[in-house]
Amino acid sequence: MPPKLYDESSTSTTLTHLLNPHESTRLLSCTNGNIYAVRNDNSTNDFCSSEWETTTQHRVVIRDALRRPMLYYGDTMSTLGVSRLRTSDVDMAPKTGVAVALVPLRDEEGTQKRKREQKKEMELYVAMDPSGEVFYPVVCDYVDRKSVSK
Image (cartoon, rainbow, N blue to C red; front, top):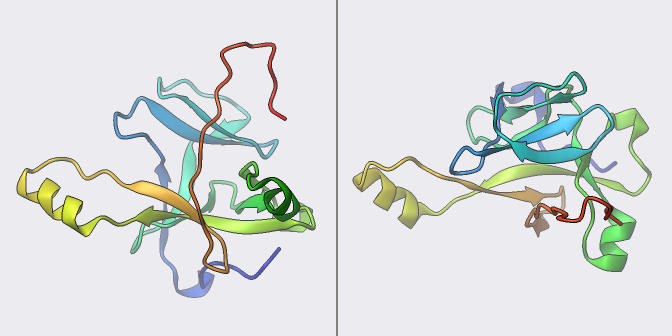
C-alpha cells in the first residue's frame, strides 16, 4: 500500500457514525472487509461496526473502528475505471490496494447560506488517494436478490 494519507503522530481523532443527510442510512465496516450502506434502525451486528475514525480538525474519515484503512483495487480501477471500496489490515492488503480517506467536499457558499438559515450542515464526502486523485463513492443496490456484485 502507498504511504499514509495523514501524519498519525499529530492527528487527534474521534469515532463517529457516517449517516446520509436524512439520517436514514449509515455506513458499516464488517470484519470481512466489506463496506455496506444499511438502514439506520439501530440494529447491531456482531461482525460489523458503524463507527469510523475521523480527524477532529478536518473531519477526514481515515479508517474504520478496527483501525483498518479503506482501499480500492488499483488494477481494477485502471482497467474498468471503478473499484470496490473495502477495508483491510495493512499487512493483509492486496498488492494492488491503494489507500483512500473520505474527505469532506467543502461548499463555502452553501455552508454560509445554511448558517444564515440555521439549517443543519450537510457534507458530501469524496474518496482521495495519496496522489490526490478524487473519487466519488457510489452505493450499488440490487433489487433482484439473486443478483450478485461482479
